[in-house]
Amino acid sequence: MSIIKLDHVNRKFKIAVNDKNFVRYVLNRKYQTKEAVKDVSFSIDEGELVGFIGPNGAGKSTTIKMMCGILVPSSGDITVLGRTPYKNRKKNSKEIGVVFGQKSQLWWDLPPIDTFSLFKKIYKIDDAVYERNLNYYGELLEINEFMNQPVRQLSLGQRMRADLCAALLHDPKILFLDEPTIGLDVLVKKQIRDMIKEINCKRKITVVLTTHDMKDIEEICSRIIMINNGQVMLDKPLEEVKSSFSGDSEIRLITQQKIDSLKIDRVKDIQINNCEIKILFVAKDISAAEIITSVVQKAEIINIEIKEPEIDDIIRNLYSIKGN
Amino acid sequence: MKDFFSTYWLYIRVFFRGRVEYRLSFILGLLSNFYCYFITFATYWVLISGIGNVAGWNFSELSVLYGLSLLTYAIAGTLIWYTGYHMGDLVQSGKLDVFLMRPIGVLRQLIFQRFGDTFIGQIIVTIVFLVTAFSKLSNHLNGCKIIYLILSIIGGVLIQVASMIIVGSLSFFIVKSTEIGDIFYYDMRDMTQYPIEIFPKVIQYILTFVCPWAFINYYPSLLLLDKVSSRYEFILGIIAPLIGVIMLLLSLLIFNYGLKKYSGVGN
Ligand SMILES: Nc1ncnc2c1ncn2[C@@H]1O[C@H](COP(=O)(O)OP(=O)(O)O)[C@@H](O)[C@H]1O
Ligand SMILES: [Mg+2]
Image (cartoon, rainbow over all chains, first blue to last red; front, side):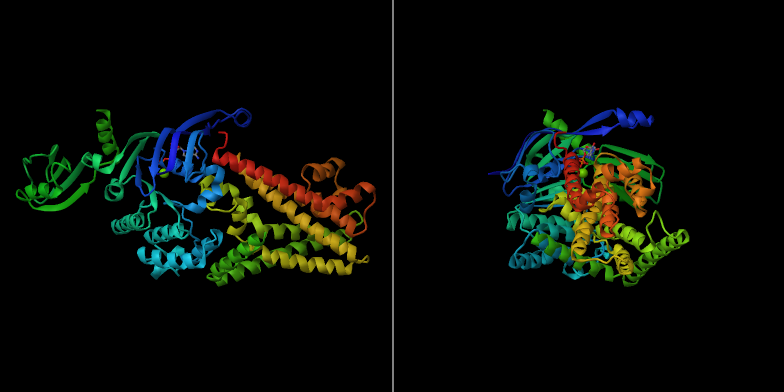
């Protein structure tokens, strides 16, 4: 059963064009229209774990904000849990949890537990439910040890985990996460992904997240919606597209000795410049380990740098599959 | 309503728990606020005692006039100055989104979010001055006047709260709302530190019918100090608390309109 439905949703922003002539700016200002979301339709079923991916400015946050009732669509219909979000903003917000990676809900000078107690009050959470969830999420997110420390002393990862807990205390049916892993280190990213998977599985919470980290999607989502320039480019179950995540990776090596020539099968390009070697490859054709092994046979390696494929690359690739 | 107060009370308690963390800076802040307003009154006193009186108002009477303006401002300040008058910061940074995610009203949350603790010193100093001024008056307060005093303080607070909300709400439409607020709210309202009869008629009308700051303290003072000289002044004095309610409703209208624009209704 679908619990989120978007039907030909558009969202435009009117941006005032700056004018050097102040009087003209005030009296007759010109506007530019930015179409942040264009004709987006999809529906999400209960229990799904959907990942929105797309480059910066693609319209991911705007779409999330419309589903939360923060923004109103310029045209088209949105239904979340049977209601139009912006018309029933307060009711809607009792049944959803929202975390914006870059906008913390926590009180800066106070420990997370104080923010939780305020949430208990404004969401009217029962004592028993509150206790149960605080224990459950406290353990799952490992926030017990810093629950009583002022937020300003916490690391970004700790803050994000506390923010996630705050968004879940009132037992939301849907959790919206806008870039929950942005700026976090690998370990915390993994912890947060595991936690999302667990609450989706065990608590049957439908999760919609946005990211521009392909790994977030690859590791936890059951479905991927890719958007670019405000439009849905692709909307498929993960298995169908997983094999096509094939952007170019790059490996840079510095060797002890000079190498004159190097030949490795299954890579796209090799550039040698004295002791510096740059190799372009596609992860599904050859692994970084195999490449390094080949190089080591020729010279001692001093430094290795690996660059994962750029999201823009992956999008370009996926877009070409969609085309045929 | 009961919900409002119990939630506000919880927020205030939590807020002060956070403040105590910086105990020294909190106490110093309070003291400097104290000192600052003490100096303000002292300056006012020096200024006035040099002249003797202003348009027939003696020092105690002028203290009532000035005190009512400051007291209502400070009370309004504890409620909504930080997040209301400065709403522009929230609008421009997009932090207002956070308040739209929660199941209670946005304005309510703005009040809850930041208790204006720095205004406490001002409230205390002002009350001391007001009480002293009232006790020195030859025409004492009676029961009726005390009720009117309370009502007009509430009305004054409402006008000040409404003004802060209106200035803040302007940020939904323009970029630098506080620049307008500084002129039309602060600078113009400061004229009512003095009996407005010393100004030209046109300014008196503006302070009554356009930016109704004279209802905060001037007309109530006329009634409280038996200075009413016409039916017109009497009526304006009587309706002063009502003007507060009207201003508040107006500010809510503007705020809600702005909030709709922020979300993009009818965009
Ligand atoms: N409040 C706003 N006013 C004007 N333009 C906006 C506003 N919010 C977003 N936009 C524009 O809409 C587009 C989509 O933004 P957004 O949804 O934040 O993208 P994403 O989250 O995918 O990075 C961008 O071009 C952005 O500049
Ligand atoms: Mg975004």
